[in-house]
Image 1 (cartoon, rainbow, N blue to C red):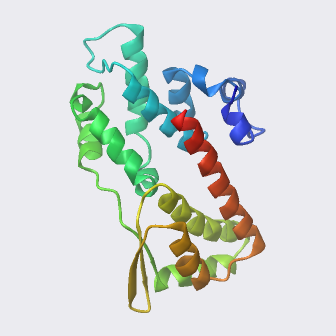
Image 2 (image 1 turned 30 degrees about the horizontal axis):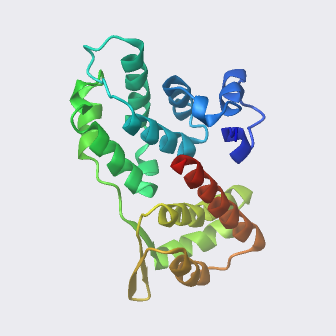
Image 3 (image 1 turned 180 degrees about the horizontal axis):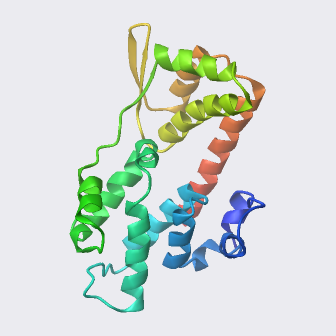
Length: 221
């Protein structure tokens, strides 16, 4: 069955014609260049990273610059965009980071990137995610702020759910109770019950879980 990224997530009305075309293309027909463009523009980056890792693992990697054919050039373009992704993304999707690092291990220093960028990527260790009393206080402040503040509060919680859904452990450290959260059940019991969640936040959290299931099912096929 034909599936495009636009079937999973609505297209932003401000998206360029090129972005719209790529987002409406069957994901099986997306090229390395297409994925590199979406990642560079930070459009639907989650599914793009997942698709990129899958495609690269299935490919005969030819990353050193002495390969000059179009396949190797396209691979390098995609890899460069993956390496340049903001580190905050890898803090949430830590398994993806380590999969990429493992994939690049023999090839990283053959890429045409500055030594600083390559060293920074190679030495990076994703941050430990923690939910503590300070987090609860910060969430409360956001929820009593402007609409923008409320969205920031939502994102605090949604990012933790994204992390747990994708294999990243969150440390719960509230009132001297220390627990490693690894499941959605623990997330709901500990994190959600430590805050005053409203219907909008609960709906957004459920939407994220539904989207995550769709992405994972597509990547497996």
